[in-house]
Structure formats: C-alpha cells, structure tokens
Length: 223
Image 1 (cartoon, one colour):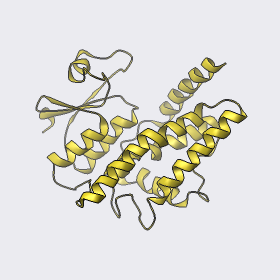
Image 2: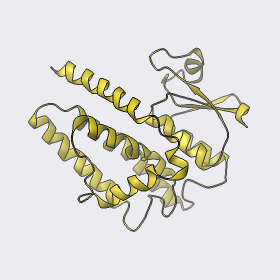
Image 3: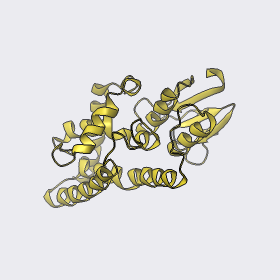
Image 4: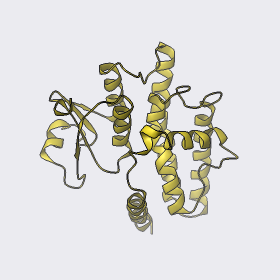
C-alpha cells in the first residue's frame, strides 16, 4: 500500500499530524515526504497549486488537500475503525466543532500566545476561555469527543494535546487549568498518551525551540 499512498507534510505541522494519527489508527501503511515549507518542492506545488500548503495525501497519484478533508477521505476509503459517527446529525456536529476548533479556538490561543501588554492579553484570555468552555462542554459524559474511542473530532483537536503545553512553557502561562477545565485536561492526557498516538509526536525540545522563534518574530514586529 505504501507505494500507492504518500503523505506530504512538515515535521512539526499540527495539520499534518492529524493525517498521521488517522493513518496510524487505521493501520494504513504510507510513504512520508517531509517538506521544507520555506522552500516548497515542485511536487507540493504540483499537487496543491491552489493553496501551496501541506499536508497533501496522494493516493494512486491523486492529491487530496486540507487536513479535515483528508480525514474524511481516509474514513470513506478505508472502512476499518471508523472515525466519523454513523448518525448524520452526529457527523454534522463533528464537522461543525472541527471547524470551530480551526476558526475560533486555535486563533484565540495563538493570539494569547503572542499578546503583548495587559489590555491585549486580557482580551485574548477572555476569548480563549470562552472558546475552551464551549469545547469542554462537548466532553460531558465522554472520555473522548467521539465517545469511548478516538474519533474524527479528537484527531481534529489533537493539536491541543501536544501544542498547548509547549505554548504554556514558552509564554509562562496556563491555558488549560485542570480545576477550570477538568474534562479537557483529562482528554488531553488520554489523547496524548494513547499508545497509537504518543509515538507520533514530534520531538518536544525541537518544537519548543521552533515556537520560541515564532513568538519572538511576532513580538519583534509589535515592538
């Protein structure tokens, strides 16, 4: 199967990591092509001429772009260990909250991470807490967003299980307080340490160094 399926991604991208996790959960063999996003390959530009971004999954020579779209393609193509719920309403809700994570949660956390000054940070904290509370509510009565096992929405939110602690360390702040967000805290621990998931995380020290540099770039622009 590996010669028919390859994944173009970077070593650190949380979006690429979504695809890695989905493929691992379904035990699908594939070839990995690590891209340098500062010097994009001809293959990446050919496979994704619209956005010119990773990840791209190439199956039998046909490219699929955008991580959430790729997750659905994987689930539709390989039926073992379904990721999306069977019920149409539940499937729609999973898609809704996955989009909410990308459009609201991640931007608010990033805004807090790079915020400068008391007023800017106060606004970023308020937005982040509001969004995280909405996400916390989706875990009531469940271990994972999909129930008792990891599913589509868990993978979509999977970046939180790795990236949040890194951002907290760098910015010296607490984003997920176990007393305020007990369900999210438990979910992060369960997801991050799942045997299938934990072996895939990028090297933490290298991630910390990367995001320190990114944060400094944003701070320097403001200054």
